[in-house]
Length: 523
Image (tube, rainbow, N blue to C red; front, side, top):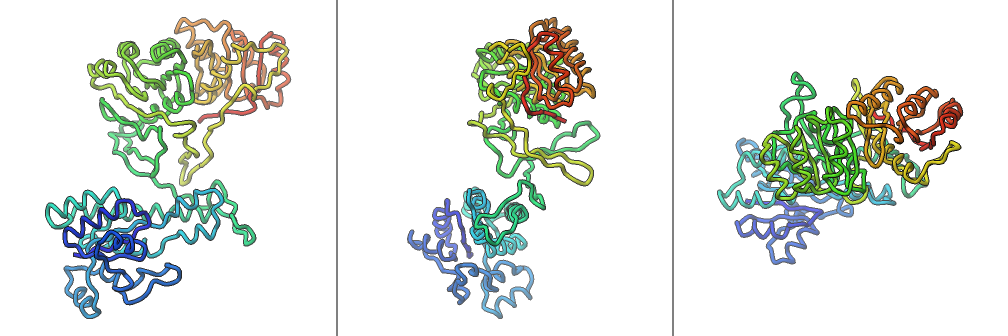
């Protein structure tokens, strides 16, 4: 049995080669890898010795030779293939271990030149991987260090790699080649060629978009029972994103569960204070901050107890016994938190269907998507993600009445929540708690009225509240509606042709109004 090893990333390769040698597998390798293996006392034949042709062109040509590809591609079950190998003195290769030049890591570095990128486009590696993967019935191809242990275990147990494993390795190999070629295409089609520029100018949106996703699971159905669905993740998921969640208990997640859970998790991650977010049908129906998980949940639930029934709940702090006891009194579909106490998990265990997810909070701004993608008929809309954060210094007070320090905090809280509410969005808040949420209406007036109605159903007074509008008020009537409901301060983007009319109305009604300068449409 022969193994050809040619890797850029040497992680675990010496241990793999030692295990193969112990199993009497003959080792073939290319320059740098061969030197490393020889340094560790392993008998290894260099590919240049096998092919009787030296590596050339600064390593651009090493393995592109019939003695390599013939040994990988020959079908052992076809006599004519084996006869051709014999006639040309070619020996079969049974195991290929290859990982590719680090193209993705190279182009991700600031200041990467076009020459650096080009020289990190692997040619021989992908060619060998494709040859071995095509001939999976006879050749096992390893493209990831995570595969080494399993293959060695099979070789030790039975002297060969099983058909099922070879096929799985082949699929993984072609997937890796697809990812690699997609990364090259994305990079090259994003640059503007300029012969005088050392570092090329890159567009945020390449001429061809090659997005790669890995399936995590099939789902029972999609948004509705007559639709099919599956759950995918990025090839390299960000820490702290929903796809990294560990499900501790409960039924399988549904399509709608996952969509709503993502909305809740993204919203709760945006708060530095202890926060709780309750989402129903893609919209936050209750958001609050408090001294701990229990207080933030109690306040969030109070916003709209009716909508919270069967909702998705997210915490950005550990859930303890007290919070778990409060949550368990209600019907919950999905619960998310960075961690749970043993007492909390024991409480939820009594409700076996509740899906309990544990997700490690990311550091800083990690875990955020950099782009949003929306499918349309025969196409995609791709945009940069709405990761804009507002601070006190960004606010522009436009009224005679100046907001108090407490009002400013309420306005920032309301604005943060409005960002995650479907447009048109109107959000009433007070003391770190949503008091009424109006979402997804064609008219901003209707969103404001619905928010007031929701507050009434929850027996919450809107007197003295802060209001956020995700887009500007095109007329004064929207402002009048929220002030009539009890708002005493308002945050909105500004930018309307009738801004002055709305400012005059705010002065007339003796309320404070600030402009954020940014809009947060969410469709």
